Image (cartoon, rainbow, N blue to C red; front, top):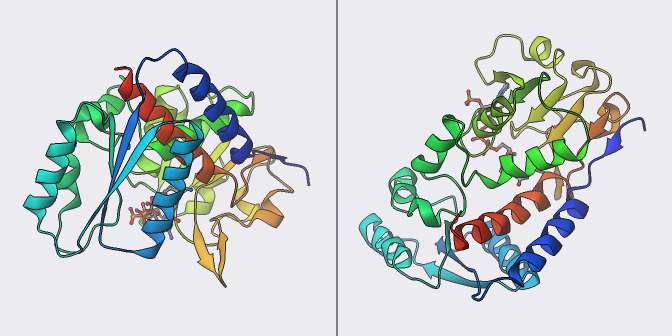
Amino acid sequence: MSAELLKGSQLAKRVRSQIRRKLKKLTFTPGLAVVQVGDDPASTLYIKHKQRDCEKVHFHSEVHRLPADINQDTLIAHVEALNARTDIHGILVQMPLPAGIDKEAVIDRISPQKDADGLNPVNLGNLLINRESVTPCTPTGIIRLIERTGEQIEGKHAVCIGRSPLVGKSVGLMLLNRNATVTYCHSRTVDVTAEVQKADIIVAAVGRPAFVTADMVKPGAIVIDVGINHVNGRAVGDVKFEEVKEVAGFITPVPGGVGPMTRAMLLENTLKLAIGG
Ligand code: NAP
């Protein structure tokens, strides 16, 4: 293997220790509220992990489980009630929401000052104008992983495969804010391979297993695999790891790469919101 492995689980552990150290200087306990609508088993598992993370850094956490047939106004009223609580500093509404609920309408109503996911339009707008405040967890974790390589982002050509606000579009903006030259690929891109071949930094957020193959990767490139795809009961990424690791300079594993950093950044965002900056 020629690529250096970017271990998100190790870096996340370090982030949690830093948070615990910062917490010692606080006179109150940061609180995170997670809202789950319905009982999707994957969401239940993700939430359990988030609660465990909160315990590790001694945050207060609570889960609000609401029925799948809740109407949108009642859900929004619940979010508004959390906005008003002084002991809750971060609010996260677990996605996906049941059909019939407009997720944007719900995210709109999370106070930007309590938006632990960084997906409220005010926080995304700040990201757009390079006034980053609370930024989405997965892109923020990706930036940390890239910084961990010791390579400069400035001047690099980054290619993001995927353009969702949750991952692709936001990480592209964060890279642009750090003076990378950014290309976005998406389902209408004519020749994805040709675009990716030019990249010094590849962020694969497509949701298709083995989408990025070795022939697409410039030798020495930083390859960040965001994908989580379930194949034969196993979680696999968007990158054909076994062959790409022979070409790349750095590569994230799945699992143990971007996922743990996403969770660590949720804790960091909650702390940031708790201390008001
Ligand atoms: P998404 O909203 O479905 O976006 C997928 C993106 O891929 C879209 O922009 C889509 O283009 C693009 N795409 C689809 N087929 C393509 C193709 N053939 N060529 C080029 N682009 C193509 O997914 P997401 O929420 O961004 O998540 C992406 C992946 O990351 C998923 O596997 C998800 O599970 C994973 N994820 C992981 C974490 C983590 O913590 N590790 C966090 C979030 C997401 P269009 O816009 O044109 O449709």
